[in-house]
Length: 255
Ligand SMILES: Nc1ncnc2c1ncn2[C@@H]1O[C@H](COP(=O)(O)OP(=O)(O)OP(=O)(O)O)[C@@H](O)[C@H]1O
Ligand SMILES: [Mg+2]
Image 1 (cartoon, rainbow, N blue to C red):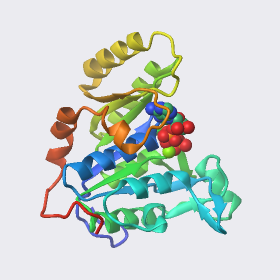
Image 2 (image 1 turned 120 degrees about the vertical axis):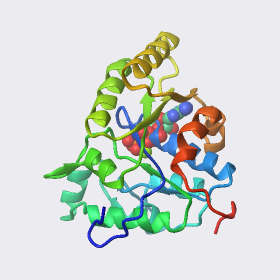
Image 3 (image 1 turned 90 degrees about the vertical axis):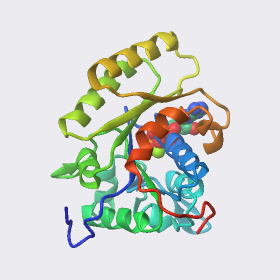
């Protein structure tokens, strides 16, 4: 596939989507970057569209971009990790319109291929849930398809998550994207029957989608990338991620 003159080289890594906004995609993406770096792979995070910046020392800063930049093992700038950042913390299409800007797919694909030229694996954090509009005629599912990366789904453990997870998995399958697996993220520490919900998620996502659980992240007061990575299933991750990488000689330090 050649997109607007970009390289046709396949990307290696994954696209992290979620059952909703605020379900733990950033914490999980940062943990995946950390875990990949621990395997000795050069890892780079991409937040293709980031809505919500704070002015710090006169500079617009987005939390997700910072978290992914710090968790990866390749030294990158904010602009490389977050090529399209908008001020307002709202739906991305609206945030872009407020600044009379648009969300350009070529900019994102170019950023992804640039990172891929510096890393063995890229972890792309989606925006909100799986089908968030990015313009009048495309959405985040189209972006995942254009990137051609397998999808990792973060399930925010809260009431309603089973149906949200199954709907998201169906939307992924309809686009013929591989669902590499799912990771449960405990965003509600007081959720009733969380074990029962997890059992149902495991059963249904295996039965309908053959999608393995890649980890169950408990609620933590300080969910750092290393702490979250401790709750990923290393064997399952290796099984699904390793075949997607061409592991080359690398240096695990920041390059
Ligand atoms: N395991 C956890 N333990 C404690 N708090 C968590 C955990 N996972 C997520 N959170 C909290 O839940 C909130 C949402 O997490 P996060 O920012 O990772 O979600 P997101 O899906 O990336 O959201 P967005 O759609 O805005 O990108 C944050 O306040 C985060 O600190
Ligand atoms: Mg996030």
